Length: 433
Image (tube, rainbow, N blue to C red; front, side, top):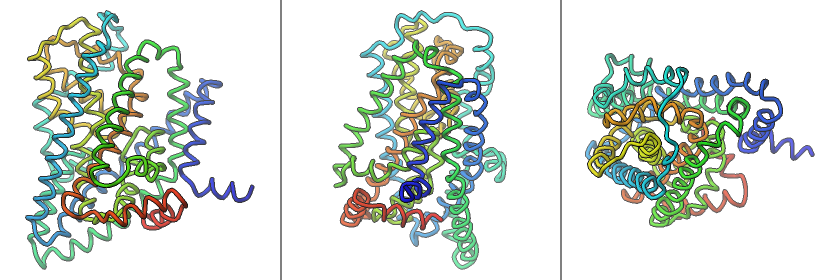
């Protein structure tokens, strides 16, 4: 009994599973109480978002400044972005094909929305467009990007700052030391915040089940099941094939990352596990500089799960509203989505905003129809976030393999130890803290 309690106390994975069960039970049995727990989930996400921008900044700057030659940085970034674009396009096509084959949304005959649904999307139609996406890449001020928490803007500043620091020579050494110290402090801060993950999961799951219930989601169940199935197909076939190419089993990788994936499942936010993912990938024998460049960049530029959702949702809305999409419209959707898919980050709510920006490229598609997907956005966020996280972990393995920066022997040994005992997890936790 004492051993079991000790195991629960030291395992975030088990705590999150318990929180999932309690949250679901509260939502089913006491919906009024469950509905009031929403602030727990929202507060946890806000705490993580509070640290994300400075954490991404120091990680990117460290990754660039640690390389003695900028040519090597440029080569790694170039290969990373090339891989991201190929996989993103494949994911977009997979969502488009899945929607066309199944004719998802046909027969719903969605024509009108109530005032409450329309009001939820008023700001989306006025603030987000295709052109705004490119203008938004450049912040008004250096500090403004961090104040807004805009990951793409922070990414741009981080790259420019890191390159400038790299070529500054001796003058930049004190700043590099400061960045390294700041990185250590931020990782410790994130480790403290992650301990609250079970509470955040409990609040988020309880609210979702209690507020929406099962019956209110039945009309959208087909979309949710199809999307989850396509994501599973993408993970098993595409990511599974890629990991096999790197010499690592996808099943072993998933088991190795089970704690992080469970937290993402409960919160639908990938930011929550950023430091843990990086440390675990480094433990596989990948250099800190490669992980530091690929993972943060992938959080904005390699959103496989979101890319699938984007094209699937656009065709779903078209079918549901009776709008026929020709080949030219579908090609335009793909072209626009390649860029707009870079604007979403792994926090609930961003998907609807970026979907609105994508829909604006096709005038015949009613933007207000997005409200039909709002009730299940949290549920959709589960497979979306999980696929995004796995996609970025696999991307890191690919780039490391490409750069001869993957110690395959160490990786297989670490994955094997993870199956047999908890020694790897303890070492990783100590490294984060």
